[in-house]
Image (cartoon, rainbow, N blue to C red; front, side, top):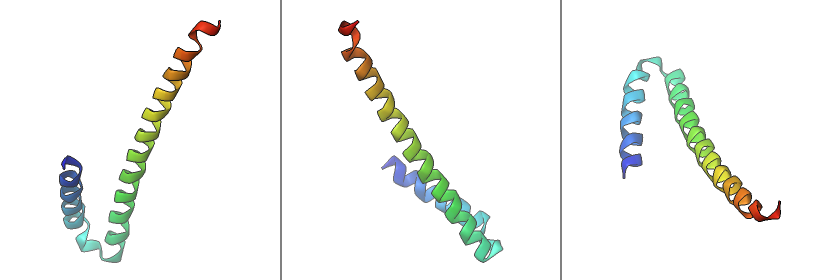
Length: 64
């Protein structure tokens, strides 16, 4: 629910901020939303990779 609220508020913010630019404002808003989605995906991949790395270090502890 929190993500939907944040997405809606950011949409309203950038929609009103970039509305006077016409077509460029729509493209800029799309790029801002695209960058936000990519940041979320990158954070998700980083968290998964850190868990996998920690798990592989734990399983190799007794093989030294």
